[in-house]
Structures are given as C-alpha cells and as structure tokens.
Length: 192
Image (tube, rainbow, N blue to C red; front, top):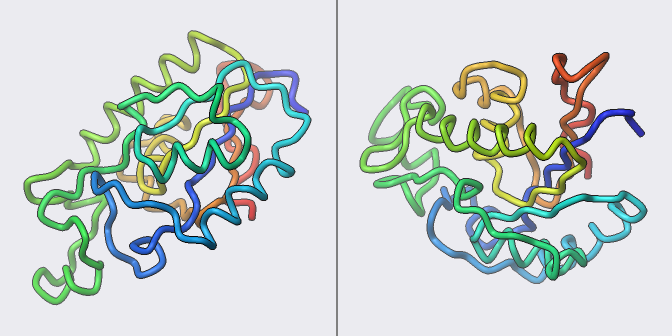
C-alpha cells in the first residue's frame, strides 16, 4: 500500500452493448447476468481497503456495479463521471462508423452531436481537482472511455492520450503518486 492517497477506478460490469461493441454513452443500459456476477466478485477484490469516499457515475451500469460490489450505501453519484456522450454514434459499433467514416478515431475526432475528447477532459479535470482537494483514497465506478481520459489527465497528458489505455469490464485500476504529490502515476491498470 502506498503512503499516498490512491484512486481506485472500477469499470462497470458487462452490459449487452459493451459485449457487442456498441458505443454506450448516455443510454442507461442494465448489467447482464455475467456483468452482475463480475460486479459481485469485485467485493472480494476490494476487501480491506479503507476508502474515504465512493463516487459513481449516475448510470445504472456503474451505480449497480457499486451496489453489487458492496459499496452502494456509500456511493455518491457525480454527473462528471458520466461516460462520453457519443451523440450520433450512440448504440453503434466502431466497425459501423468506419464503414461510413473511414479513418475515424474517437479520441481524435469525437462524435457528431456529442462530445470531443476536450469536453470529456474538462469533466475529468473537475474530478481530479476534487480528488486532490480531498487528498484521500477514493473508489470510483464509471465507464471505459471516461476513465481512460481521467487516467490521461491524471498524468498531465492531453485527453486524446486516453486512446492508449484499454479497460475491460469489471476491471480495477489504481492511480496514485510516486515520490510525492507532484508525481502522479498509474500504479496498476486493467486488473481482472
């Protein structure tokens, strides 16, 4: 365990759309049976860690993951933790988008009628400011693309660098510090 605060990031359990590769931003999808089972297993993986606070995206997939992992009574919903707004690309796969828009990349190009990486980055910066103000070990439940941008911004990288971090459903990642609070690092990533 680090001498400094750590930020635990949990991607929600599987949904029908995450399993099929459909972009799921603001559509409030429930967890699948497999997603619920994986969320329950998170309890044992997080056991014994003293969290000062638990924050969740308001989506049912993130919040229900928190509930099933045993943190529902402590989880505060924060709108800034919502997944990327995919706009016109909501509910369709990258393969379908590329068929109509060859070369498209989410983190570079954003989504028509939705968010650009910079928009998501601003929300991530708000969360990071709150985390640094609290300066304690916090548990966060959210979605893949938002958490990837959060990790990039934690490191001081542009939001577009979130493209370099992949997250599986029901994975745990940990942000923290190395030598002091001026050296943010990724301590663990995408652990299943």
